[in-house]
Image 1: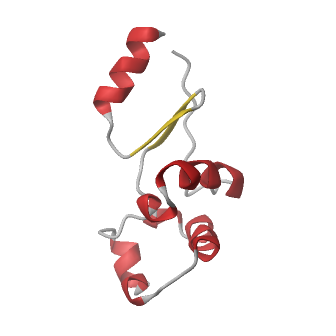
Image 2 (image 1 turned 180 degrees about the horizontal axis):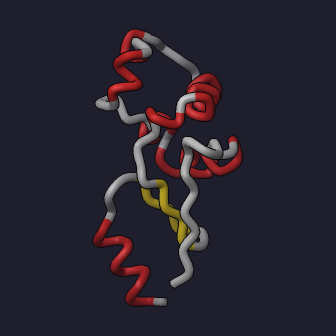
Length: 91
């Protein structure tokens, strides 16, 4: 299986890519509320629209729950080893 790795600290995720994940899981699923950066920014006190959250996630990649994995049209957020293994089995 061909893989492509993107270091989000070097190149931010595009709005389109994040939107794809947000449409499937909801934008809140993309936010790592346990990350140090999330806490440092005081984001726990904010109430943002989905559009505003996408802006924040683009500007602050350290609050993204990772890895964000795409396999064709299939998507996962975070460690989803069972799903990944199923992808490998069908590849």
